[in-house]
Image 1: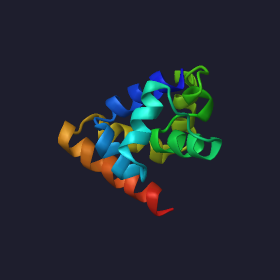
Image 2: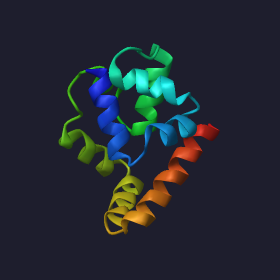
Image 3: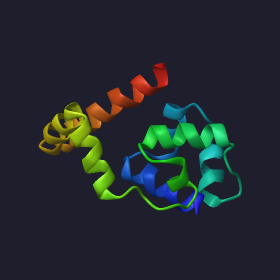
Image 4: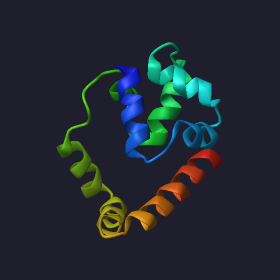
Length: 110
């Protein structure tokens, strides 16, 4: 299940294996291994991957995706998330890619 979920998330992010590997700091062969199921990340890496893609580790490992209600509740509790969603929903694909690049860069800097 991890292999399929990971590949889906990488593709949804619009990243090639090479681009993801470079951004995440692993070898492209590692990414290929994760996607083929011949390799599995350790738990610390699963947590980093979950943070990178904005999902839970449980989801990456085959659990249920967070319910839409949970996401809406999170936006309700934090108005900045709602504002961010509203603004990004109206962006061009290129602008959204730029925002995602900035967010990913910030995650790497932490």
